[in-house]
Amino acid sequence: MEPTDGPPPSPNESPQPAPDAAAEEPVAAGGAPAPAPSAPPDEPSTPEPRTRVLVDVAAGDLVIRGGAPQVQLHLRDDRSQDGLAEDSGGVLRFDWLPGRSELRVPDGAEIEVRRIEGDLEGRALDGVLLVHHVAGDANLYDMAAVEVMQVDGELTARHGGALRARRVAGDVQLRDLARAPLLSHIGGDLDASEMPGLELRASCGGDVNLERCGDVSLLGTIGGDLRAEGSIVSVSASSIGGDVRLTSVRSATLAAVGGDFQVAGMGGPIEVSSVGGDVRIRGSAGRIRLGTIGGDLEASAVTGGIAIGRAGGDVTLDTALAPGAEYLIQASSDITLRVRGEVNARFVAQTVNGEIRTRLPLTVEKGRRRNLVGVLGRGDATVTLRHGRRFCRARRKGRARRKGRARLGRRSGRPALPHALGPRPWPRGLPLPGAVHA
Image 1 (cartoon, rainbow, N blue to C red):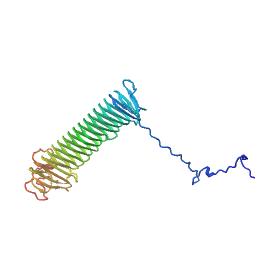
Image 2 (image 1 turned 180 degrees about the vertical axis):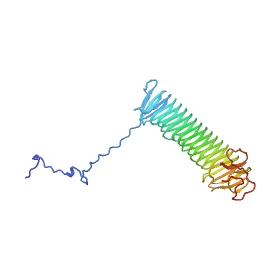
Image 3 (image 1 turned 60 degrees about the horizontal axis):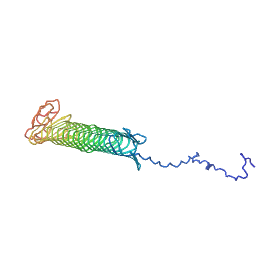
Image 4 (image 1 turned 90 degrees about the vertical axis):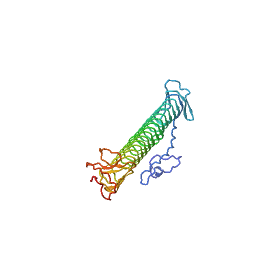
């Protein structure tokens, strides 16, 4: 009998099988211990219910502030709060609140206010606020999401998130909003800055001022002026009753402008159906299309090309002619074209009962008193000038203006030699008499 370690087994104890090493400690294929079986996944946690508050009527001014641990009501006159609130199906309801009340709610709360007899002030609410009617002004600061149906006074929103306002009787001031606000009807002025976009679906009775905004869509009418500055992606509007001034705007599409139209530093296309006053354009790299102009047109550095359906006043165009660009001008009064730099273009000038004058060394394809077709250089750009009652002209800057003539000219240090185109056609390939030769 071989000796064994340990105490002997008890005689009354049934023999136990030897332990199995494999069952005692699982081993992986490589010889290392296998990982312990993972614990069963936890059950999905049920989200905490949102705090919901309903206020039927606030008798005066109401302040709503976020960041509280629970719903708290502060009354300015220390009156009793008994009977003001009741829990109705998980909604804390206030049938009536006295004036100058302050309602503090936790983050994530949903608040609905049906009527405020005074002003509304909202601050630091990381939740949702719905207000049906504000009899006074609405001032919103650091509000995550707000929808206002009607404001009888003015609306101010700063440093917030989403905003919707259906009807505001007074002015609207918006600044530094994380999302593009949606507006319907504004009775006063609209001032907006530093936001990714803006949409006005109905109308604005006053002026509209936009600065450093994103995609701007003005689908309704604007009773006053429109001013847009600074890195605005696009502006589109149906009609503007006053003047329009656009600076450093990428593109613009307008239906009708009642006053003057001024543009500077445009990076994209411009399209306007009609302008009642004068038009002044200073620098545009995109295509310009203007339907009718009631007054004068002055355009410089329009390298993207320009097309004018009809101008009632004088037209002065001073620009370099970009390759492939098209310049089409139709006017009832004088047309003056001054070109800069190297010129490679094909020119067509027509007048009904006026005359055509040029100082460009054109290679004439067709030359008559009232119809001129010529080419200068490679003819990359296309210039078409059509005059309804007087003529087309090109002249040097600083020269005395003479009514009833049209001229084509190039800015240079050489003396100008004005000569009217003769009454008989000139042979193809011959330059105009008296032209300045490059």
